[in-house]
Image (cartoon, rainbow over all chains, first blue to last red):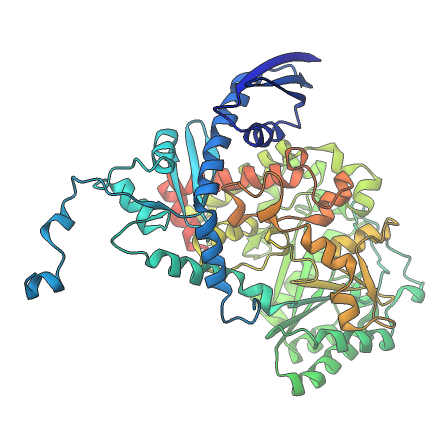
Length: 92
Length: 489
């Protein structure tokens, strides 16, 4: 089993973002995650013979965008859903 | 301000060179291929964008006077000071898509007999030899099930007879059809019937009854004679001949549109997709559903499902779809059903009502199964799982449980709660979410968990591949796009 370590700065990426990105690779790897000062240290235990570090880093960037989009639109999403189900008798 | 100024915006409002602030509307994205992303909103409108476009959109840096800005605005990915009507329109479209949840159960499957004359290796329900009447549904059970059918608020009710081979209990089918029609004098629903049969017992009496009561037929055709007979063995080794004779007879008697066929993919099928499609054309069938093998019943016992993986099935599907597109280019309108469903989901404002591609899951909301013994299951797959000894998705029994007991059972509500893609790991922020769904029974059968890890899921992998392929065709192949869009209903 290949082992690899990646570090992410917690001032740049949230722990939640990192976890969401890593989850998408659970078919190919398992992970240990540690917090040390400003670093999120991810130890990757790869089940496949493939260097996944670039893919994982790119996925972290994508997940960071996803999180920004989701946080920014959370209130509007609630508003749209409330509007959609108003007058249907499904919400009081 | 002059009177004119009150009615018209000032000149500065039309200055395209000024970048104005815009607000993001809820959206998700997924990687489509190298460098391209699918950006979709809450109601399934989408744009294919590159990473720079995606970043500039999220960071609110898209210049106001660009086509990309107007694409984002017209498809409701953003709104600005000009208009906030997008929020109302999104709500309206969302309500339209969600309407099927309020309409509730439309498809009611009656397993009128578990007996069957076939011994298919992949059969997803245990079959019994045809002399065991103990495995037939009784009139008393049918009566109780019918009471439940008409408690559904759905304006359209479809009753589908399944087995085993349902025509082995044709007397009960006649009884149920007549009783349902009698009930319907009071309830006045759009009532339809389907018999899913191998057609071995398709007599003139059956056809006359089907004609009299507008009953559709659905059968199984796995491909050319050798493949079909190998997949679907019966005494006499003549299953193909019986099936195609039955299809022809039904087409002549009832009309070409009154009979359809489904195929099941086995390992032997994988190298024969063109021959399989040709067998459908030869038998004057207008569509085919290139289905993967489901992980239930005898399919699992015989480890058929493990013999080929999603990647191999997807190659089979892609080759088949290419061939079908070529058939359409030659002027023959012939449809691949799953692709049609996906294109409809991508391009139509309406929910498509396909049980597997819904959130919450269509289990018991869209379709429900009344087994021969009165047990009620959330889906046909749940019944298959029960036949393997796991009754996790058994919701009750028509003799002992009320409508409320069954539809408000923990077995169902817990399952539905676990099947909202909007709150599931990996699904909740996936760009394909508006088109996809969740299949709690599949994930329970394959991973022992109704939610399942989507990184390990064959369901997720299969659907992602299909979405990417179909969107790729719609975006890059104008010929294919014209054909696929002609399939939108």
